[in-house]
Length: 373
Image 1: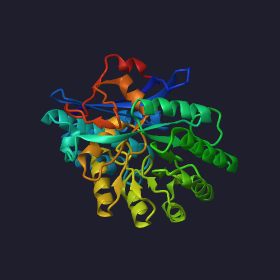
Image 2: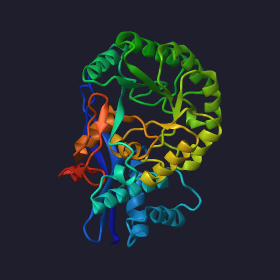
Image 3: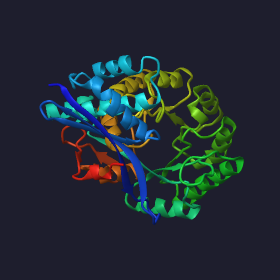
């Protein structure tokens, strides 16, 4: 069996958020690898470099992969590195190599008739979940309204975004001011007081706060019993994150979006920067890289928790390895997967049951390539 064809598309995928009237859209990289005997593996994720990743796969990576054994995932990554990234492992190459690895594992699962989580070790067949709901564009009252809706559905672990700052779209990232940090603390307090102590609450700065801002925010919200403070420091600087960790009692979580390789995760561990590791398979080398990251964290007695979106990929890692943890269902990534695939698992009462179908357990819906841009 050999790799016959590798193709990537950029899809404009519609989805919806609670209380937001207008339809949202994400530009998603969708990858398909086909073998010479007709097996197909898939992967998908939204990245800031969405056009570039698809172009890289279609113009360069596909030729390197052609004729290779799809079961030899380490050989595929090594060849991609030797041929296309011998001096740089970050950015487009890392994102593309991660999606390619995921698609190859999807083929491996289909060949053996097993879900990926079993091939990774099968440590558990269900995982605890949490929901990322707290968009910056929500008012304090809207945060509480959406939080109440989710808790009524049995989702009692929720995460909200902080340190987003002001920006034209009022949706995700910006440059936070000191006033923004004060407002973030007020929003956390408002959610906690309105929704009560039965709620497990986390916050995520998406690598967007300066050290002084992160310390100040952590101190302001310490009384509200947060489960963790995720990606708190600008550009995920492990040395500065270690300073923050020593300055707060809130557990520090990091490792999603941009770790690119386990050497970056290693710096978090050696600098004692984190309490919780969050390798995301869409960034750290797919499931091959995810296994290495999980083993590295386990060597330091560090728990994994998911961060960085795309639960329908990452749940396989967390179910597969012994130190796997909670799976994040971001309201965006969750709906994107449901738009693109049949068989998308959903959380219920704080848990997600892992798919029993082969590979990812997902089947692309008919007509999704009509979304290509």
